[in-house]
Every structure is written in structure tokens, then in C-alpha cells.
Length: 72
Ligand code: FES
Image 1 (cartoon, rainbow, N blue to C red):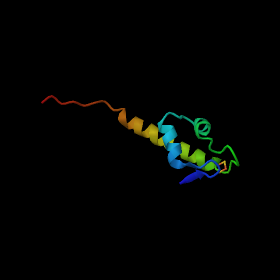
Image 2: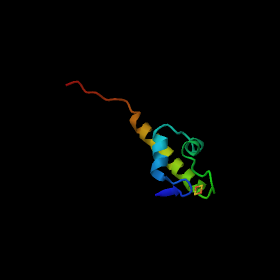
Image 3: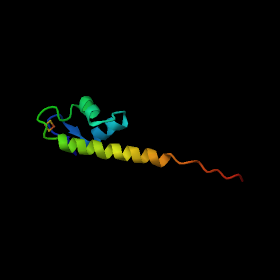
Image 4: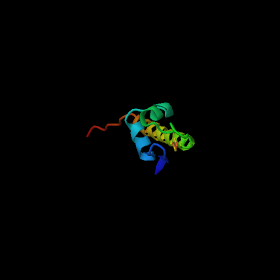
């Protein structure tokens, strides 16, 4: 879905930017220029960034478990 109509930025593009290294709303804004015109999309853009960062952190936390090997 389009988050920023002025710059034509979608939620998928925001998620991709985070998966490619953006770590904050400021990073995403600098990379995609979201909310750089009228600013009406800022709240939704921040929400998408927050949700995506939470998902990334949760998925990384799920990987941080000790390996459990059993000798056969
Ligand atoms: S809708 Fe994003 S800057 Fe206008």
C-alpha cells in the first residue's frame, strides 16, 4: 500500500529499506525521502518503521538460542 503519495513510497519499500540496513525512521526518511513534502504520511511511515523494526528484532531474538546437539 502507498504510505507516501507525494514521493510514491510504499510500505514494502520501507520494509525493504530496513532489511537493507536502515535502523531508524530518520534513516528511512533519508533513504526514501518519505514525508519530505506535505508531511501527512509521517505518522503512518513511523508506524510502519516501528512495526518492521520490532519484527526484525523479534526474528533475530528467535535465532539467539543455544544449539542442542545429540550424539547418535
Ligand atoms: S504524503 Fe508523504 S510527504 Fe506528502
